[in-house]
Image (tube, rainbow over all chains, first blue to last red; front, side, top):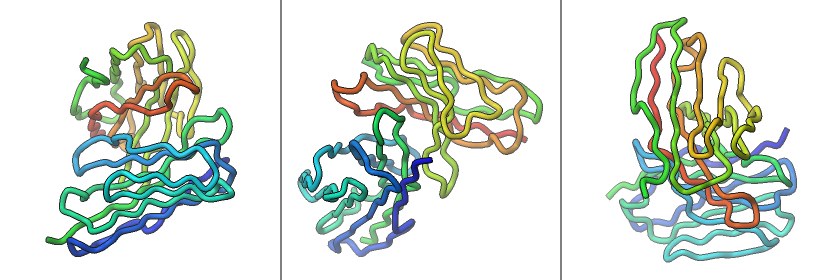
Length: 110
Length: 114
């Protein structure tokens, strides 16, 4: 079945450093979504990408969807302590349910 | 709007006991989902529903049953709990495809099976 792989599993950064997490699918995706889960909280939707090569920005966060629609990335510029949490990508192929990656846990050292 | 709510927040069960987790949403969403989250495993889909009266199996359905008798509620049942079912359970809902596919998650239910 469809698999979504996400790396790295953990990332520790100093406050102010940049951070990137990568997501790869075994199949071509119709769309990809990104979620953030704060420690002890629930996943919260960040963004959805649909088009090949699409790039979207939300303040310090930049999301990309690959040309082949099989990979995606989330880049955070100049991390802050408020960015702490686990970032999940989730992809959909056709009409199937979303498949979540295992997430990247981000720690920010002040 | 309360969004997605889950009951209970926390529960301890003994092996072999049964229980039902309740998920309720007030956004009139057609689609509802049950996930379990284990350390290092991300979110795995247990069962889902695309409308009242319909259910379907997800990635890890064994040991669980679900029912969607009312559009706003989605129940997850454990008939005979096992320690392997110790996890955090999240419910989510969304509108049908083509009208925004954001999934809205509930706060979660922490289940410990001894």
